[in-house]
Each structure stands twice: as structure tokens, then as C-alpha cells.
Length: 373
Image (cartoon, rainbow, N blue to C red; front, side):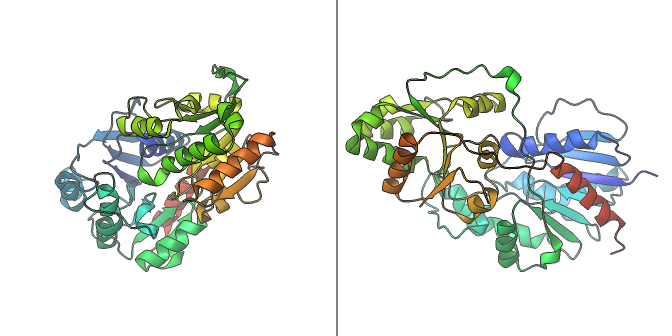
């Protein structure tokens, strides 16, 4: 008889969260004998079969916990299963919190770092209000839906320590499974950059903690301290070209000639940049893993990263990284100039080619079901 597993991912609509869900579904299709009901918030191009059923549920609302999301997590899923006679052996959540489902085992993939870091946010700032919510309100919902049958997965040992300290739970109930680092497909690399420039790349979003402003400050310093180097540098940032706030800052600093806003690009296009650039920068000061760091190190790119515990763990033993204080633009400018003057590639991180994080995740879920607790 097939075991029944429910996947709760109704808040998953785009970005990294959707990528996580798609990768997991792709792994499920391999030698799967269990019955999966996957509740998701996005249209996923997938041919259902007898064992994997996709159910689209809209829980859109204000912030991460709108009224529809609250209703679904506390009532909707439970009563949907009751009406349809679905009796799960395990509930898996890909959206950081559990659900109300008495006496059922739950496995939660926790990938929201903001509650764990000791940074303050202004509720009355347009750019920070959502982060205030994640820092101050979100942990309430995480705690409320934890039971003695709840297990968590996080992406780093450093995050596990923060998580255990924050939520005061048994460390044996928190597992570390690092994400897969995808190999670069070199068969479809169409990007060509002007080789007369020194190319720097930052794959990012415009969230404040991604710290794009520190790079703009650093470029302004370079313009003042070393005009020759500044004139030969192109900083490519994966942000929209029509971002008014960003363009205002760039214009005010008069660094337009050195900045290329690429717009949102595909993973394959990111790979093309990796193959053509001279340096990757990663000034973000809040991450669970920081996948671009591992991707860049996987091909031996020089990297400047914020000196944070997450980056130290991801890039442990990688010789091609230098670290800069996340809020010191002068330090970033000098690190960029040092790399500009000493160009080269490094020995790639020796990744285990047989490592499969989703296979580990599935093995963990199987062991939780088999445990007589």
C-alpha cells in the first residue's frame, strides 16, 4: 500500500522557492512508490501520474501571512484532507512553517533567514516594513505550529545553530542538507562581453539586505581614487533597468559608465556571465546559503564576499575568495582594485559529483515516516 505524503507549498509562486519545489518534484519522479498530493501556488508544467497529484491553491495576501494563507495553514489543508478522505503519513512544508494537523508528522524546509539574523528593521520604512514582519511577526507563526512531531531541514550548520537558539528546540530535530550546486552547461553559452573591460558580476535582487548600495559606494570611491581603473571596469547587476531609485543613485554618484543593469536573467544566462566575467562580488549580509557563491567557486572564479558566517561556511577551504566587511565601502573598493590588479582563476571547489540534496531529503522523509513516534 502506498504511503501518503502531503506537500504544502501554496506560497510558492516564483523565484528560488519555486525552483526548490520543481527540483524536488523532478527527484520524486525517480523510483517513487509513494502517493504525493502537492498543494502549490503556481502553475507548474508537469504531467501528473497516479502517484503525484498537483493541486493549485491560491493563498495570496498581504505579506507572507495574508488571511488566506492563515486560513489554509490553520484550517484549509486539514479540512480539505478530511473532505477527500486523505490520511497523510507525513506532511512536508516548503514554506518555513508547519500546518494545523493534529498527531501528524511534519517535515519543514526552513529557508527564511531574516528572523535568525540580528539586524533591525523599520516598520515605517517602505523598503523595510516586510523585513520587520519577517523579523518580529513571522517567528510567532513558526513557533505556533511546532509540535513534538515536527522536524526541520536547514541549509547550513551556521543556520542550524541560529535556528535552534531562536526557537529553543532540540538540535536533534534539525537536519542540515546543503543545496545542490548545478554544473554549468557550456553547450549554450551565448554571452560575449567586451574584453577591453574588467567585468564584475553580482546576481541579486533589490532587497535591502542584498546590499547593492555598498557596491555603488565602492565604485564612487574608485572613481575618485583611481580613475584609470574605474574607466576600465563594468559592474553587471541583475536588476531591472527601469528601477527609478537605483538609477537615481547611480546618476547622483556619476558612475553610469561603469554600471550595467542586466535586468532579470535566466539561470543559463547567469552561467554565461560566470564564464565571461573576471570577478564575482557578493555583499549580501543575510543568507541561508548564498548559492551563487558555491556556483562561482565551482568554476574557480575570484570572489569578494561579505565577511559573514554563512559565506565562510559555503566557501570553506576555497582559495579564490577574499572577504570584506559588509558595511565598509572603502574596504570593498580596495578589494576590487586588488583583484583588478591581480587577475586570474583558482582551483575550483572539489564538490562531490554524486551529492544529491533531494535524495537526502527524501531519505530523511522516509526515515521520519518509519520512526514509531
